[in-house]
Amino acid sequence: MKMTNKRAQKRASAKASTTNVSKFAPAKAVAGGKSAVKFEYAPSLESTDIVQIEKRNRLFIGGKFVEPTSGRYFPTINPATGERLAEVAEANEKDVDLAVKTARQAYEQIWSKMSGKERGRYLFRIARLIQERARELAVLETMDNGKPIRESRDIDVPLVAAHFFYHAGWADKLEYAFPGQSIAPLGVVGQVIPWNFPLLMAAWKIAPALACGNTVVLKPAETTSLSALLLAQIFQDAGLPEGVVNIVTGAGATGAALVNHPDINKVAFTGSTEVGKIIARAVAGTKKRLTLELGGKSAHIIFEDAALDQALEGVINGIYFNQGHVCCAGSRLLLEESIANDFVEKLKKRIAQLRVGNPLDKNTDIGAINSEAELKKIGKLIQLGKDEGGEFFEPKCALPEKGYFQRPCFFSNVSSSFTLSRVEIFGPVLAVSTFRTAQEAVVKANDTPYGLAAGVWSEKGAKIHKVAGQLKAGVVWANTYNKFDPSAPFGGYNESGWGREGGRHGLSAYLDVRGK
Ligand code: NAP
Ligand code: MG
Image (cartoon, rainbow, N blue to C red; front, side):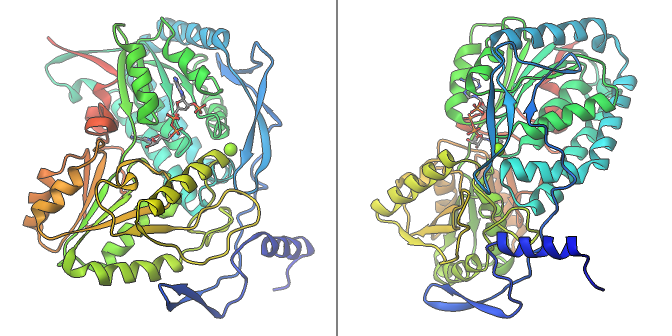
């Protein structure tokens, strides 16, 4: 079939804008001195035509898009190009106050009086509209965040819809979740979320809050507000009563104004441990309820009897896909000594095959780092790892000339005292060390201020159960990694947070549950 001119032009510009050289012949990729075969694919760019981005994006208060009182807007950047995508309104204390008052009114007059069945209907409608507009949401998310379209299309957006469906189902069955107890919504909830999963974090926060009968004021991250504002359009289309969800965009000061507002009943925060501590201090001594989902430094433990190729893919999925921008990223790799050398060689070959480049290309494995500041932070931590004496490896793949990109890399022969074994890097950087006994593996995995997740890889079920039971991590995956489901509670130990999101545990965080 002959291509139309327009399609031919698109293919040509796709070719020019991707880093993956468009040859079908296998090319040599250098890995650890040996060569591995890397098949090059023709570029396959997702079209952005489906997305209409407003030049100026206003606040969403009382079911309408409204100007910020200050009249101030800030730019949001496409991290894959470094170019400005749009401007977003900056909400100040007055705007936050208006949003909270609006949410209070909607709570008292409408949402708290509505039956669970009716609330559920709105949530089902929202879930279906998310599915209908899935492609648009995925493309916008990739443009504003930098994550590969494969991730936003196949993981984030389907999970967003799943969260609304799941909680829609609970809305009229809450009494069965807490049998023999009396339950009541909390009131107005202030929610602050980060940039790594902008839509998914919005869904994790909004869906359970509404199902339980609360109203919401949400503050998205400064660098990734656009998909939350598209979600606001979906709320309008679903006919969600005005004021039930309000979205105030802005930076940290907007988040602080929301957290400190005297008329909210609960704060739900996902973000860094540093800001989580500030929020915990701000909420202490008030009657506000608080849940915190914070950082992590999660470990894979790979035993010699594991299916090693499968484990390798789990490691790749856990830290490199999505640029390591995952709170539960498997950023530490603990290898049983007998297999360590072979596994590290396999890892070198495999990461040399990963494709770093345009996140809108369907072949891309590793997209753009979300902001220049994050890229600089990752670079500094890599340098520190080298200075501390870690053995560094990165493949020699080309990076796009524009935008914020980082090659996948790892440090081997790293000890638990290295900075890169302890701090969250939030980039595609892995710290590899070894162990001799299961007990040593557990001690090393638990030797962290965090405790969000872990992965255990072994053929022996009994060994997996024994080790998993000793790990101080909110989620332990066995022979897999980074698998999510709205019915499974998620959350951390120690500095990884307080409380759980998802499942019945997640519902209790949005309800006042008392014995009858
Ligand atoms: P962050 O800097 O803590 O920011 C998170 C959110 O808090 C943003 O909306 C931010 O606004 C806002 N904020 C900043 N200062 C604030 C203050 N004083 N009061 C109230 N809000 C404030 O985190 P991030 O860098 O965006 O996100 C990465 C972190 O999130 C990582 O540590 C990651 O592990 C964690 N995370 C955890 C989970 C989990 O479920 N445990 C999930 C995803 C991410 P700005 O946009 O202006 O910064
Ligand atoms: Mg952006």
